[in-house]
Amino acid sequence: MAKKRRAKRLDVEPLEVQIEDLTHEGDGVCRIDGKATFVHGALPGEKVMAKPVRRFRSYDEADLVEVLEASDERVEPRCEVFGTCGGCSMQHLAEDKQIARKQQILLDNLERLGKVAPKEVLEPLRSSAWGYRRKARLGVKSVFGKGRVLVGFRERSAPYITDTKQCEILAEPVGQLLMPLSEMIEKLSIASRLPQIEVAIGDNATALVFRILEDLTDADREVLLAFGKEHNVQMWLQTKGPDTVHPMPEQGDVEPLYYEIPAFDVKVEFLPSDFTQINPEINRQMVPKALELLQVEQGHNVLELFSGLGNFTLPLAKQAAKVVTVEGDDGLVKRAHENALRQGFDNVETHVGNLFEDQSDMAWSKGKYERVLLDPARSGADEILPTVAATGAERIVYVSCHPGTLSRDAGILVNEFGYTLEAAGVMDMFPHTAHVESIALFVKNQ
Image: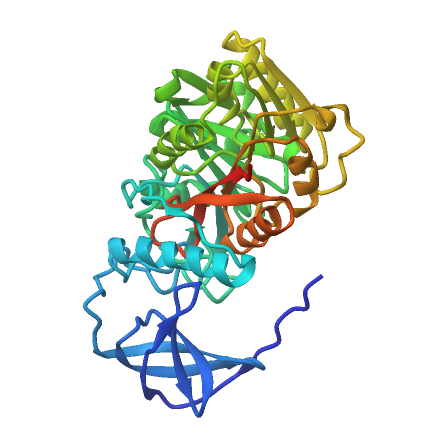
């Protein structure tokens, strides 16, 4: 387990500094007395007044006080709490520059960590940069000093809930519901015992999951149900762990949430607590791009790892002879199987498996597959790569949410298992944040 960083609070007068670079998290980099200092909200090429606030062993952090000479790449943030809220870190950087920056981060990581470079750099996948976020976890806090309940993302450098009235990146209708939610929660008897709201938005409906630490009164239930009816959202409750998430029964039967992938005419149903891609426009581009890179043919057997609900599975099943999927969450595997059956696919075989451990004894791992697709979590897929290579797959598509672990794994596939990194590029799944989503194609050397 990584050690927690220890910081010393500083009380230093603002200094005039020149910003030289940008960190992977989107902070400006300067040097004060030879030590790297990260200035949140500053951009390369700018001269700014910065106030050092925290000292770490290898670097310091500073707050931006004033921009003296602005970069040509600077734009006015749309959000009124940008800089305080931790939901975004790059609204001050022009959108074209954000995605170019992410592409360069990917290429730098591949070269530095993986000692590889793609033969082709893919054109970035892009979509609308506002109102795109369909999944979120919002904090809730009744704050005496503010005289109201706060609902929103946590602050950038503190555990407090950001005092905000609306969110520019949350998809509708939730982006405009922060104040109505605040006012509604204030009416509840358990307002101080409701710490979190999970947001899940499908193509057809919106679900809000309220984490409650005490039982609701009858009056509380009436307030919640009235809110759901007024704003046309499903009201769900969570009393303990994720397996306790359930719709309020007074609503009657609620329509299952789903999203569509139009290019393949498939529909993926999901629960509000399930993992789904947060940006539907990018997902509708990403899935076809992945299958285009894989070049799946009708006679192919395809192995899909970290398969989730079937985001790639259902489109793959339309093109391949057989799709074998492996996922660690048995609930997701069950719902992926149901999604496949619901749409008439009989060529999908689903398995539960811990892909962070050796799986070489499992029957599915002994098969031969012409194609492999994997979409792991941030920690990557290094534990399962020997099994992937043993399949003999001619083409591997790797979808990644962390350029560092993708780069590490790319180095393994190329330098240990005889693959070429044929192509790689980024997908702007999280505009205005420092998150880098990417996709890479590996081809077996002949």
